[in-house]
Image (cartoon, rainbow, N blue to C red):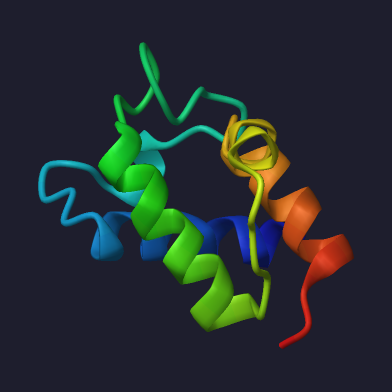
Length: 85
């Protein structure tokens, strides 16, 4: 799962155009929204598209996304269990 976490960090930086952030700047348990990485609702939509495109995971319930996108740790755990690609 460590490899998946690194890939997720790279994808988040690329998909969201986080030019001033490196993989090493993102800790596995840091919040992605708010005080952590500082992502917003538009970024959440981009992450939902990424999950669908890259892992075959379709999110339909916004509350589900809130739980999944808490941190890299929660995202990687969810992807490991639910991926279809």
